[in-house]
Structure formats: structure tokens, C-alpha cells
Length: 308
Image 1 (spheres, rainbow, N blue to C red):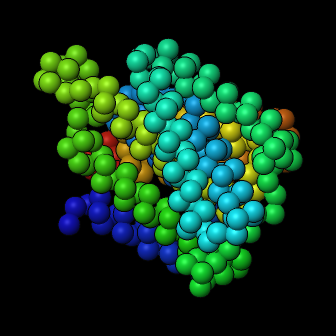
Image 2 (cartoon, rainbow, N blue to C red):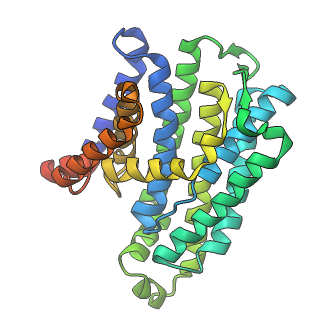
């Protein structure tokens, strides 16, 4: 068993034991799980395919709205609500990816941002989103129609399970031959083309998978916080995902998760500073980037000579 596998098992065991402790709020950890999935989705695209997207909030927010609407208006079970949300974000990701992968670098990033702004505009106009009010009071429902997720402890286990499945999916994709091709495209795209790989097809597949995972995080967030709002589709949300990925460590499996935990912590503890919280977060981010050039997890993995 590899060191990475052992460490991952230890981390998940610790996360499973957290509800029995009193020093961490369940709701805080559930929020971390949601944004960790979101950041891991972006890292799959940025860290392994080398594509920087500023439009992932469109997938996160669209799945959040769709899941919230399905739960509140259609009365479906939470797993069905999440499935519907992921399907919608995946389909949207395929369309966005088809339009965006024809460009590279900053042009790719700007196209994804522009497309995401269209979704933001639609979210302010489409009736079912309720505009600036959003969809509030989203019921958590009953998992498989049997387990009521209203209690915080039950919702925690459900969120941890979804997070674990998302993490295993990302790990499987990264370590598969498909993931190796993505890395080769990131390192040297012309060489990948010369080897006969259909680069655009691989990029589109990576973008679509990433969009679906981002939607999973958004749908889970709608269940955890029982709210879907315009904040979920705003471009700032995409910026937060990029920040989490860079801070934790681009191209590492545990980096985005660590980055999400740090950013959510900072948002909670610095909330009392009001408008100064953004400045404080930015200052801390600069210090971390200067001290950990490979990201927090990336630097640790480099120093210990292990894969994280």
C-alpha cells in the first residue's frame, strides 16, 4: 500500500470521527466538503490539463439552482436532486467546452468567463431562480427515501460520502491513461499532437468531467445550506475556486481540499472585519504564495518526497 493511500485512509478516518468531537462545527465541515469538490473539479482542468477556467461558477451555480428547484418543487430524494443537477452542469460543460477549447491561454479563460456571465444574467431573469432572493428553504429530504437528512449529523455523513466518491473519481481519472494524456497535453501539446492524440477531444472530455464535478459541489451546497443564490453563479465564485487550487497546490490531489479548508476558515474568522476581510485574505494569500511556491500541500509533498 502506497504512502498516499495510507495518508488518505487516515484523513478519511479522522473526518469520519469529527462528528464525535466538539471542536469543529458539522456545518463548517460540510461547507468545506462542498467547496473542496468544487476546487478539485477546477484542479482537474487546471492542474492536469493546463486549462485555466474563470467560468466554473456557471456549473457550480446552475447545479445548485437545479438541485434546489428539484428538491423544493418536485419533492425528489436528495440523491436524485444531485443527479439532476450534475446532469445539467455536465451538459452545460460540454457546450461551454466545445466553444472554448478552440482557444488557448488567456483567450480560453476569457471565453469561459464570458459564457459564465451569460448564465449569471439568465439566473437574474429566469422565474424559477427568484432573482436576487434565490431559492430559500430547500428541504434536505430523505436519502433513498429512508434516512432523513434534516439532522445535522445525518447530513454530515451524506456530505462526507459524496465528497469521498468525488475524491475517488478524481483520483481514478488522474491515474488512468486518460489522465496521463492530459498531463502530456499540459506539458507539451505539440508533442501530444505529433503522437497522434486528438487533443481537442481530450480537452473537451476533461472540461465536461470537471463541469460535472463542479456541479456536484454546487448541488451538495444547496442541500447543506438549504439555499441557492446569485452568489453561486457570480464570477467571484470562480475566482475563489482558482484561489483554493493555487493556495493548496496545483496538480495535487489533496491540494484543492486543503486550499478550500483554509479559505473557508479565513472567511469565517475574518467575517467580523467587514470589507477589510477581503484585504486580509489577499494579504494572507500573498504570504502563502511567497512561502509555499508549490502551494501548501505541493510544498509539503516536495519536501517529504511523497505524492499528495
